[in-house]
Image (cartoon, rainbow, N blue to C red; front, side, top):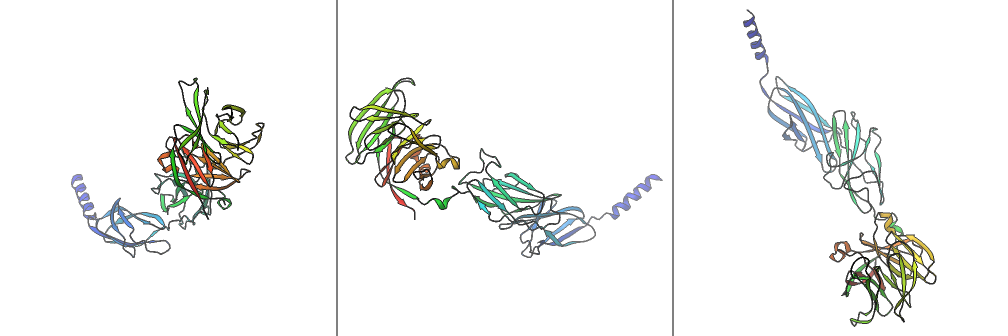
Length: 442
């Protein structure tokens, strides 16, 4: 008798099982009452419908049983929100009249941005099941939890402010840098996972922290250019003619190099004088004119040229690696590779002072050229798209907008010596000399 009884029980169970197909309908809205138009409706992980302008949706012919329904909404302004719920279909259609999405938090405009910090702020989450905020950063707008770098987790629903500073994160070999663009996003989590994601906020750091103090600002425009005779490592203007120095390596490292100092008439295209120095195995790094003499940098030391005897004269040592020279306000201005300017007395070689270049503040090294005109020290850096201007005390007072980094002439140019020719700035790139006019920015 046991066999027939088991068959009877199975038959009764099969007869009671719901094998029908039903419809699921409902309305998706945010918990503030706004309809979630175009919300995507998923059933068991498969996209089935999109909500209309009133937030309504319908999924037809769904087999009876247990299912997982998820609604997601991506708003170009507010961000991303989702809700997931388990449902059971049995005996008829299912109407989910009120499917509430949490309102995404919104990243607002930063309260402060400097060259090395960004202060973020967002509105408070309104969801009752809030667990935590997760704040991410990325270098592009393709930002989600898988691509971004996690900056911070806040478990207090009222903790909606975050200061991001240099050194707080590290990816792609970089931290927060001046004049750089970053993207931020806040994700809100509950006990089951992600509820919503904020808008993606684009923020660019400042180049300088005190732009209102920069009052000597210019642009430059190429006026003319001429070819030098070789590897030009220094240029100076004596009021009438250019002095240029060329470096040529002869033999190996310990062999003497040849330095050629040339007095050049640019208007006539004629060389007026040539002085050759071949007793040194040092290289030349910039020259300047002090009103009566030419000075040459040999890296760690500088030497004057006696133009009557055509010999190297006074020798002074200062700095670690002098990239270029200028003459101003009674001092030799030595531009050190390590982001500083040294003021040297040309009479006795004493140091009258020194100050850092502004490039130290924004993480750039590699100073390559210096020039002086009344009250302005111009410094060029081969990694940056601005020439910085300092006053006689070393205070940063202005910038010159340039586009050398986008110009092929800078490629492979280790030195960029400069000098003024009246109201023009002259910059040498390898064997090419470029003359620029200067226009103030009002």
